[in-house]
Length: 386
Image 1 (spheres, rainbow, N blue to C red):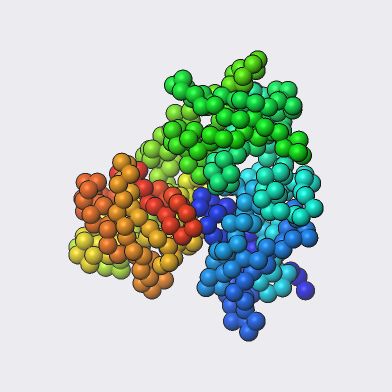
Image 2 (cartoon, rainbow, N blue to C red):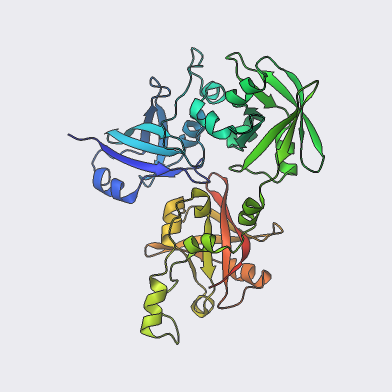
């Protein structure tokens, strides 16, 4: 009998949970007498270990999933293929953004400690992707939850070798383009891996970096105390982060129709609105954005729906804690309610739109940011064309 598979690309916020696709669940899991509330995951990275992960509603992997993700150093853009072994037992194959299988060096202790798996493994392909081939003094890094939790960041081995840092240890200075500096510690692990620790949280906070963000460091001083320069994003990247209204960004942000009735609209116009749904972009970073339009119907009925493809993709449910946030960081809490197959926001959104001067007929671009576990924020980026 052929084995059954499904795949999931990892999007921002994936550390809190992962959702089994509806089609796979309904066909191969739902309705079985032996349906379990715990999933068992294995991988080639640690073939003798099994991770037990709790499930909610049968589809949503929650408690234990974060440990699996951290242990395998999973990152935004990775692709996971789940092969169903039996019932809720899956073997997970891991691929990087380049669609090449991720390989891990053997650097585990006898106890197979998860934290040591997370801190000591190495992925040569990823390091080749993160290091700049044209400039070996640069490398690209990702702010992972494990970096914030353990205040530690592994250096790519290709970067270490290219700059002769295999045995280096001691103070290392991080400097931004404004000249502000932070002194951290460069250390060596027993398995020969170089890492920087003691000070990342302060550095990230001061430079506006959050979990899931990427940043570039360049070695500018090799003699004496090492100095790494933090390079700001390019102008193009900055515009995207600030919610620019470039056409290529907005094309994937069309929103699902909020109602089955539109006052003073003819039939053709209504059909046109209905087929203008939110579509996932081929760029994972763009899938965290959504466009919402404030219509007369929303104000009259006091109801505002989130596009179903958007909530399905990100695993947003009525159990998700959500807030709306403006550019200054002010938040408005909202509760999520289900209505049919869609999810709507109950409360908070009217005050949010009013505070940001959004009028009926206008549209806004919002960015989804996962904070922790089942808590997320929709951050105001800009007004956009309806």
